[in-house]
Image (cartoon, rainbow, N blue to C red; front, side):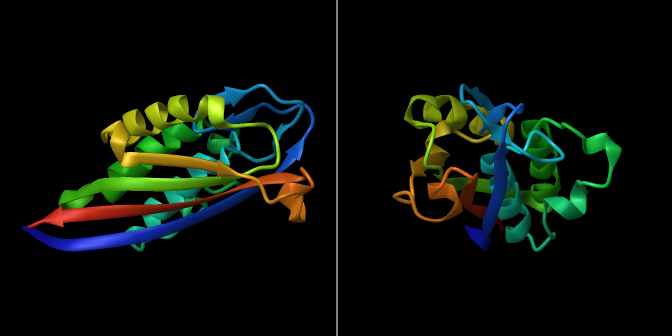
Amino acid sequence: MISDIRIGHGYDVHRLVEDRALILGGVTIPHEKGLLGHSDADVLTHAVMDALLGARALGDIGKHFPDTAAEWKDADSLKLASRVREIVCADGWKISNVDVTVIAQAPKLAPHIEKMRENLAKTLQIEIDRVSIKATTEEKLGFTGEKLGIASHAVALLLRDL
């Protein structure tokens, strides 16, 4: 029997710039631009981390990994997500599932989604069928449609047994 259920939502956005790698879900994706950020700027993984932290009311990734700290410069977001998993799974909590939507006009993400799912499942220590990743465009509208940046939304469900 389950005693508690928590849902969290996460959102992240980063600007696309030249001379940076494009990393989403821990996958380096060939593209002429990458995401600007203090860490590797993996908006997909950042949204998942915020959703997980939000479900436990533990703030956001900026609280746990501030961009003013040199130790997080160019950090691998999957390693940060592993630490977030440890934090949110304290006191008997378990990650039930995560669902992510990435919003990008380009590049096409479909060929990379399965590897992203594998990376997140391994990092969060959950089965791959509990990780959903979808990609969409905004039909050339807004900053993502104009290829100025990439955004991501995520929801996460946490459970704690009796």
